[in-house]
Length: 399
Ligand SMILES: NC(=O)c1ccc[n+]([C@@H]2O[C@H](COP(=O)([O-])OP(=O)(O)OC[C@H]3O[C@@H](n4cnc5c(N)ncnc54)[C@H](O)[C@@H]3O)[C@@H](O)[C@H]2O)c1
Image (cartoon, helix red, strand yellow):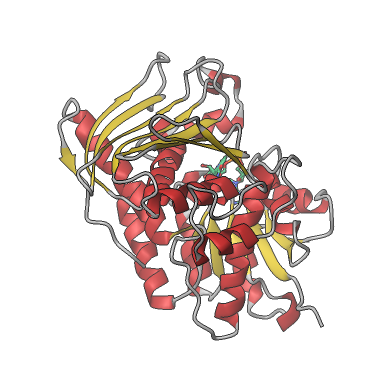
């Protein structure tokens, strides 16, 4: 008989919230996970009203404290298997810590939290409790991101010399926060967003994409955090030149004032034998450039091992066997989220069964990746304050 779906509790998501919706669709994508509860808003009365209005029945709670505390007394089949944290950045640390202490797995939005002190405490708590913890770096969930990672890490484009990892947006090119739009208000408030606006919000995605695809770490940064919109408290433009752990170089850049660019995240990895390029706004295609050859354009779903560039090996065969739909029926943002939740579900099920689980960052970002994102932002803030002086990153950690 099929196992019961995993039960997910939401922290945040009421009244005009954004990212909860792609997540909740992705949670229900396979029928093996479902949202059963939520603490959807900071005001307890509104939180309960929002739960009543949810598109399908869920248990509403006045606060995440109540939701986490109530869990231990629920019948086994109603207990939460994991919580999803989709609140602004200043409300990540507290619910995550409380869930870990209550023995509940956590899938948390990025950036992990507000600062390195909080991030370090979370890493310690995960190490101590040995509970699965995922961080929602969406773009790792695209099948083509996984193919890019395979190609680069397998050495098919040689040694990595140069990476351009970027995330360009234009939606904050005016002082949108003054209109009261909630997503703009908290993202430009240092108490709610953290020390960097653009860097924390989308520069962390660009960093994660670089680390995931190449397996390289940033060792030193020379950063310029700039604010183009007058009166804004945080950077809206983020440019970081990086030294990589293999001696290569990278540009990690993000902008919220680049009019016309919507969610233009992409990566160019230039190696000694070729270059790989991928953009999330065209997520089904990955381009490989080889010297003196026509470009190879790989479409998800229309790829075979042993084609003269892609070898035949177990890792690629496993990647090709992953469930996707036929090529030409486009996969996109929701599919990427679903893939992250699918892999997280597998780890949560193993953990609950007392079996070893990986949570090693190969299928979704983990708490150590979240920590690296925060370490990167803090190091960039230091470098920028010294006019872009080369500044060393803390040593990478694992869970
Ligand atoms: N992975 C991605 O691609 C991606 C995209 C967008 C946002 N995000 C991240 O997701 C998080 C949320 O961003 P958003 O744009 O959806 O924000 P949002 O403002 O649209 O939604 C935040 C929600 O949190 C609720 N909330 C705030 N404090 C709360 C509390 N104490 N208890 C319960 N609920 C509370 C708000 O009422 C709202 O429902 C942020 O950390 C952001 O960086 C990630």
